[in-house]
Image (cartoon, rainbow, N blue to C red; front, side, top):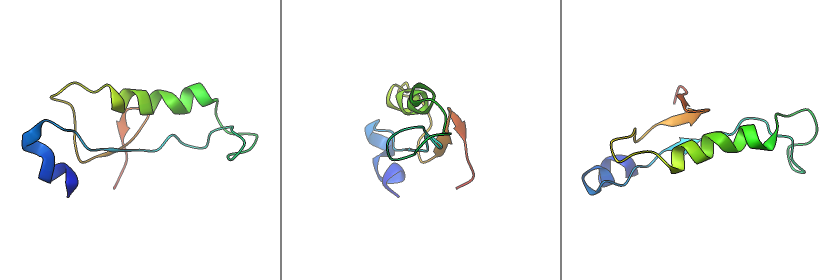
Length: 64
């Protein structure tokens, strides 16, 4: 809803799942922090014509 509401402003709204990441909260066995963070960085640096209203992991859409 927020993505649709802000579409004309040029503000992109997406959700990003970093996956299971080996942090203090995620515990051992998860993927490296850098790998989990890369999808967040991808979303934060999307161009103005990038996707909006989506759910992503590693820059790829996930079923919503």
